[in-house]
Amino acid sequence: GNPARTPPAGAGLGLAIVRGIVEAHAGRARVANVPGGCRFEVTLPLAGANP
Image: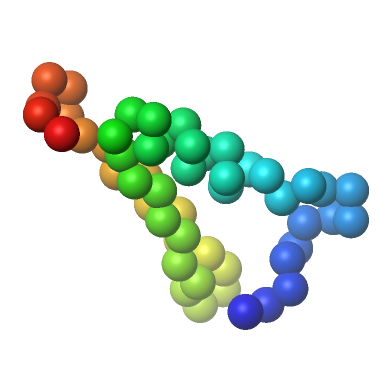
């Protein structure tokens, strides 16, 4: 992959935090490299749906 674009002071924890929150709600967080950047996808179940 390409080097991270985070400034040297950044810890790079954003995606890990998002993933933890989404998974705690029975969802899924994904990231993919696409031309010109990245695509972030968050999938959550419908309210009241059985996991």
